[in-house]
Amino acid sequence: MASYASNIADINRLRDAKGGTWNAINAEYATRMRLQNRFATGLDIARYTAKIMREDMTAYDADSSQYTQSLGCWHGFVGQQKMIAIKKYFGGTKGRYLYLSGWMVAALRSKFGPLPDQSMHEKTSVSALIAELYTFLKQADAWELNHLFRDLDAAREAGDDAKAASLENQIDNYETHIVPIIADIDAGFGNEEATYLLAKQMIEAGACCIQIENQVSDAKQCGHQDGKVTVPHEDFLSKINAVRYAFLELGVDDGVIVARTDSLGAGLTQKIPVSTSQGDLAHKYNAFLRTEVIESAADANEGDVIIKQDGKLVKPERLPNGLYRFKDNSGADRVVLDCITSLQNGADLLWIETEKPHVGQIAELVNRVREVVPDAKLVYNNSPSFNWTLNFRQQVLDEWQAAGKDVSAYARDQLMNAEYDSSELAQEADEKIRSFQADAAREAGIFHHLITLPTYHTAALSTDNLAKGYFGELGMLAYVKGVQREEIRQGIATVKHQDMAGSNIGDDHKEYFSGEQALKASGEDNTMNQFG
Image (cartoon, rainbow, N blue to C red):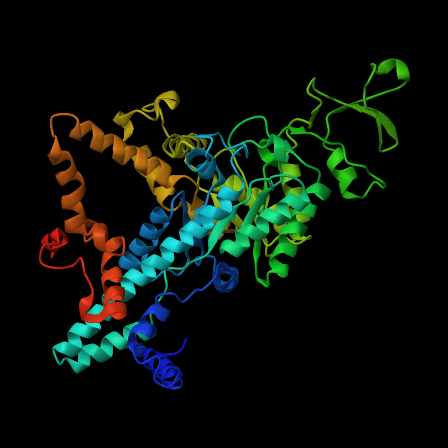
């Protein structure tokens, strides 16, 4: 990017070339507005963030400790505050992304009201949320730069040349809040053309990474619920192709596709694909079907489907709703085939939906994939659908039992009891939870860890606690002590909510446009001044 000073010089030259008709334009003010709007379009964002994500993937391949993380978002303000906090506490945004959860779009953004995660919400609400998230992140840039500009003016007014030079350097080396968003397109919201059209909207809104799952679009279920129905590989690959074509059409050549498999917990398929040889994908998919051998027409009922498989006639087990069952205990093998097939046909990253957070289980699956695709790596859902406390306490209990350690002090069906919270078992389990992401990045090929629904739960918990106190005996103290006082003491910028919403930026713009005639909000009577 051009420096602050060179931007001012460029605009001065442009103004001077207009023969005096632009004399009211202040080149420094225009430069400030230009820097506050670095990304003119969503495609600018998609190209910028795709490069970041590709670089992060390369860094992870060289060193598994360089894994990345994100938290799920359902509103632009939520995403903005996350990135502001990350810059505040960690000095930069490297390795930290945002996740756009289809679950939260369905539950919190649908015009139909709260919906389950079954792709019943308006699909355009997904791309609208991507655009909203980036609008708020751009506002975070504008807000932070506005404070730097104001500090620069104050330093100049005070004659502090060293501070002014330092502030110009900060402006020249400013790190944006714009980060990659991993965006959930569910199962594509229809056929491959529908997937392509929605992917285009998502990319135009700024998405550099799209996650798509191998469930049937019109029978989609949450990955942690029952009743999941998968599609044959050819059907899934056509949608991966559709997303890739959307990226290429829009000039986002580094766009990232995450192929998610729900096969571990999916026991059903809607479709028996056509197989033309024993080695093709359809044959491999059909080999997992639960079937019985048919010796003659007498062994079949009216309307039964019969296929030839490995030289025999077999009847796949079909449910009254027309769906077909897979063989028991075939999920892991199907996951491995899904992963290899996706990576060999255009996907960049994998997502394996599991029923529990267990490093050993994930590693076993990924290591099988890596026998064929050595650089295979995952995006992994650190899901609130898991009872993390119970799962890890059970894992520790099982490890202790296997090692012959006395576990008589613990009842397996009571491990959530608060009585155990200070126990040796609970402390070891908590340490495993703390190190889970680093352990799984090192041992199970996980490049990116995300929590899908964190702010759904934090909003519910904080609102519950506030309501309990405010409408109870604490009254206004519930808000003051539990919220505002903590904002002040922790330096949370939202305590000055007018400023956070752009009041100061608006004042400055008014001054740019109207000079001394500007009617500004930040005078002596603005109560925001009470916060220093």
